Image 1 (cartoon, helix red, strand yellow):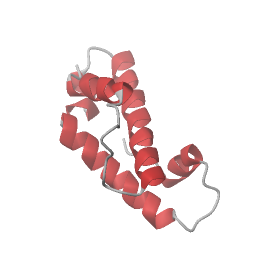
Image 2 (image 1 turned 90 degrees about the vertical axis):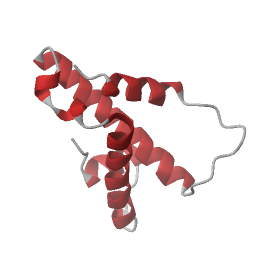
Image 3 (image 1 turned 60 degrees about the vertical axis):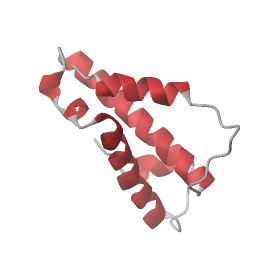
Length: 101
């Protein structure tokens, strides 16, 4: 379900190629992050009650991956300030994917 480099660049609004390697790395890292948080069951079509539910899960996973990539691309760091609020959208999507099916 990983997004392509082109999809990531369009989401980030990056029109140049200088960061291609970095963005490709972020795609891999974001996929590993999501899988680490929720497992991989959300990728399996047979875990869902219908095709429509599976497609919804795929769209949520794609949205979350784009958000994680964007956050990592914009911040380019590993520290989090003390005043950072928990992102409810991210947490809600992670919860939904963790309970796929």
